[in-house]
Image (cartoon, rainbow, N blue to C red):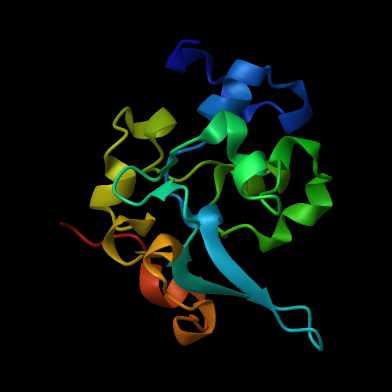
Length: 155
């Protein structure tokens, strides 16, 4: 998979398994616990991340077996594209499902896997682990964008 091929511009259903996994930028935002307002359907993110998430790297500690440890962990590949609305607005899977381009800080565009962290577009700078006993409802965010800002911050 060479970057100059720009395979990530293909529709999601055309991606190989290897390409699908490579689309993830390691932000870890999808691993934040969420709550849904039953009246409005609006999804609220919390600062509390799944117990399997390595907050520093933004990667699952046991990705192949994650659903055995966390039964409500979803497989994006198995979901319908219209169900991606709960994903963070910067998620590469959501962006591509909506026909949008990847952001300039995505490693497939800039060539640097650390840029997502340097631009404060990952969980690294604000997440807490549920393994440490943090209650989700004590750490709800009004909007994920409120903590991520515009993504132009410098380290």
